[in-house]
Image 1: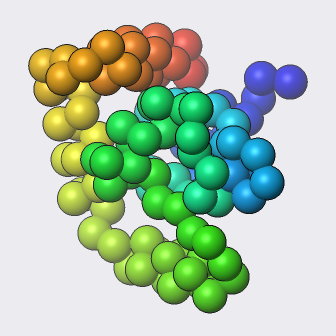
Image 2: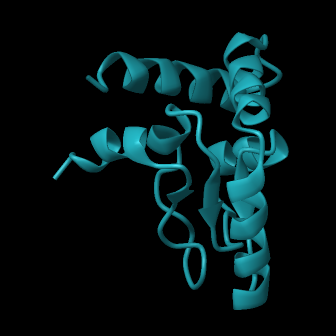
Length: 114
């Protein structure tokens, strides 16, 4: 228990559980490692997931064809562009309460990741 957040540092892409029949699990831990996140499309009720999706960090799919295309694209993606996107999220002044909550949680998780 609690070890998954340490494994994200070795990943190129993080699969966030859920999202196919129920809402997704916590996406914030994985986002702290500046890697693309993938999940099923059901992210309702998870405001932080919507912010991550809007910032092009969390990517969703509806079927196996979309997943295959998405993974292929993400594996070819310039990682520095994604890292800059996440860094902008860190530095951005809060647009709403959710952004502020996400940023403080990511910072907390980064500080406790080692």
